[in-house]
Length: 359
Image (cartoon, rainbow, N blue to C red; front, side, top):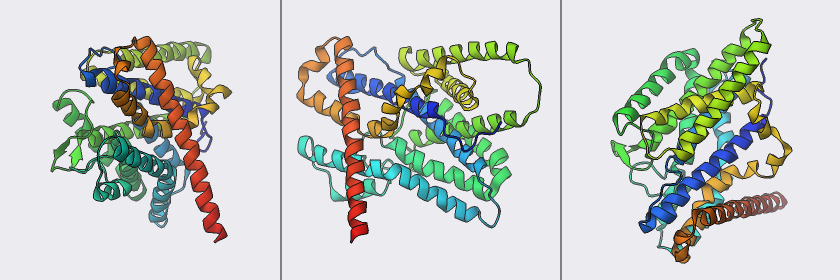
């Protein structure tokens, strides 16, 4: 049962849910912790970023297995993937960068043209290059890390799949375990003033996603006669446990630690279930309801910190509200702002494209 080219709606819904987790984490940090107030809420929700990376690695491998790559067309396919990834990620990134650049200069501090150009070229987060958009390290790693791993797969094939990528993943895992014992951290330079902890955790997450698809690919090729009346209930129990444990890990854990690495197991199992369409509880992710929100995930992720930081600076009483009031307000504002940015950039780039064609 190979469904390489079929679009899986549940994956879009998962992106949106993971994005909500990240927003909840940043609300606590930027509203409560910033003002020195107790912040017992969503302290480890940043682990949803790992779920993003695993899903991206899974889709990267899914695309790789959907095309026929030979020695003669490996370079062409690698370039095609790079350009496709650029086309997918860059327009929303560019618009979010422009919005953040303008608002930061107006409400906060001046940003130099050099910093802007380095961010424009997708180089922010490397070494000591400052970020205009907080959290942009994720997009940088997703773009360059994904391209790097795909190039390895294109040019080295099985050697990359069975030697290079596992070795790279083991090195990343050992580094994270031995430097803090958790997956937290993103922007601080650590090696040769270049690689950040975020780069290492991103590469590990992408590799886990690739391995997850490899397992699904292997299972889809097996021709075994299982008694599904026994297997399905077991899968549903495992699904319930994975969802429960993932939510508990991301939303209710009080501090980072070695158990954070379990996120890779939970995310991989959930993604695999959705890929094979064997989910029960998660069938709700394929409901038509999600199409009104899921496409906004990337734009919301890029822009959600802008309204959070503006409200932090200009609405001092927000941090003293009940979390049951402040969190929904900020969450709604972040989603609404992302919605406006998404449609504004779609309209802007459509206009630019029209004018260029007309000219």
